[in-house]
Image (cartoon, rainbow, N blue to C red; front, top):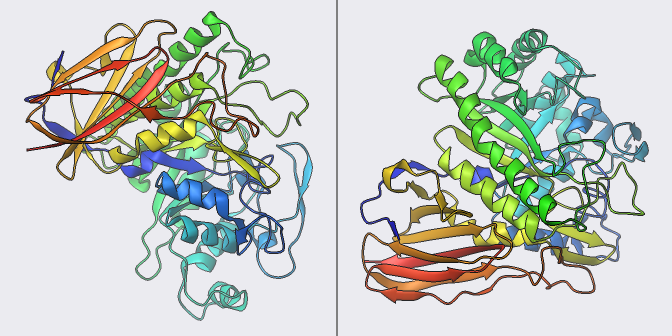
Amino acid sequence: MIDLSASASTHRIDRRVYGQFAEHLGRCIYEGVWVGADSGIPNKNGIRTDVVDALRHIKVPLVRWPGGCFADEYHWLKGVGDERQPMVNTHWGGVVESNEFGTHEYFELLDQLDAEAYINGNVGSGTVAEMQDWVEYMTLDHTAPMAELRKRHGREQPFKLEFFGVGNESWGCGGNMLPLHYANQYRQFQTYVRNYGDNRISKIACGANSDDYEWTEVLMARAAGHMDGLSLHYYTLPTGDWDAKGSATDFDEHGWYETIRQTRRMDELLTRHSAIMDTYDPAKRVSLIVDEWGTWYDVEQGTNPGFLYQQSTMRDALVAALNLNIFHRHGARVRMANIAQMVNVLQAMLLTDGSRMVKTPTYHVFDLYSDHQDADFVGLPGGGAGAFDSHGDVTVSRKDGALTISTANWHLERGIDAAFDLPANVTEVLRAEVLTSAAPTVHNTFDAPDAVRPVELPVRIDGRTLRFELPPRSVATVRVGQR
């Protein structure tokens, strides 16, 4: 039994760790989000209604855009006004981008989602002046040229811009820079990401790729005082081989457990990067932002290899739950995370096919975990890392007088008898649901959209004792009121 009777809240779980990432990649933006006002697919101002409704249900707090690698070849002026200028998406499939979805359309999406903005600027192929002009275009309420241009394009009032990333993966697709060179570039570019009026922008520096601790060391030593956040990218690859990542739906027992093992590396990465940041920022002013994470497999057969379209099984649901649990535990430093990606790309929430849409197992995990947003994290006794049994992981939070317990069991065959001694008697069970599947490789399709979905979880209450059976390969949430 896990004793929570005397457990204290140590920090708040920032809702932004449930952030989303929408890049101009494959069918994420075009078809996944944007269909145009004249489309036969139901939409509001060109943005498909079913996708917005589904994302609002899981309380999406923030959307990162326009990339990703695409950000460092995106020139924003081509995507505003009546005369859009097409461009070639050299990173993802070599397709021609119409630029029909640009700055105004992005903020329309945020308005419909009631979400915050996180925009990545172009350092790799852009200029300081271009970035400065974009920030002015979005946020300046004045008679200056960029503000006047925005008004001519139909937006009188400035947009609200909460987060701005100065470049993306500058160690790779964003310019193949060395850390000191990027640190100097960052210091220069960020100078011109200015605050206008009452808009306050949190500036995010491009951080490390996985376990590149030197990058974090150099950025914190050279530029910590000029940033509000430092990013980190880490993807779960079952094989660890970028040239042969493995199938999303055709895997064996080894592929299952290796995926779990690679996912749990996130805890080590956050621990070690945070330790470096603590040296230069002991007050934890600078956030560690995991703005790209999730599974990355070989693309589905018959799809464009540059579109990164993959299916999602219960294995991905466990990956999502384990990562979210880790983010919760590191919440004193990790204040944002953006899963890659929102629709039709990599570990997506949603998949679309024309007018049809399906929710993935990963979507259902974000739904099960939604009550943890902005809740007070409750640590386990003795500072436990979240593990219980030999193959389980748990996270606990408190909000609005209720306790939310989410558990993950990654064993393929064995269940877990989960038991908790709570701080007070249970007054009511507000939620008790479990997500599991008939077999590890089962996934939702357009013909069988509910093959993997949450169902009611039987719970046993005795005063302040809570028990339930956690099936093999499952994720569950129980939320209880207390007195």
